[in-house]
Image (cartoon, rainbow, N blue to C red; front, side, top):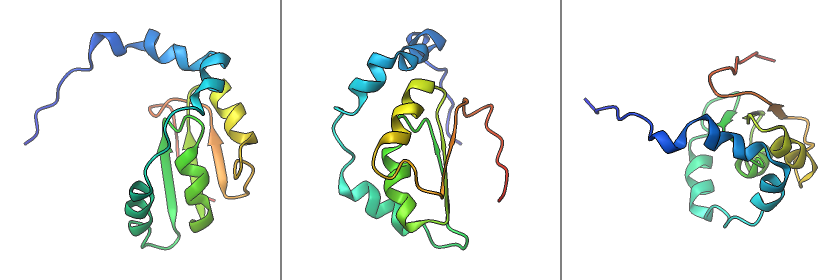
Length: 113
């Protein structure tokens, strides 16, 4: 059995609150992109029907927006209003099958349909 380690103290709520700052959200797009291998691996996991994806802590929804073309539904969860506002404006952010949720992972409640 794997041992659970406590979350480091420096990664508490104050750290997470930084991502709600609009300046952090607008700078977030300059992060290095995920390698293509990430998408190859994730796409290989889309075997069931309907093809559903849940991305927790989606930030600007890079994974959600890219996988949306190959799925029936993507639920993208992010507690930062600033991140989600920008994510919706990026390519693929307005797709009908991408559902944006502004809440924490703990608050998220899946609703079929």
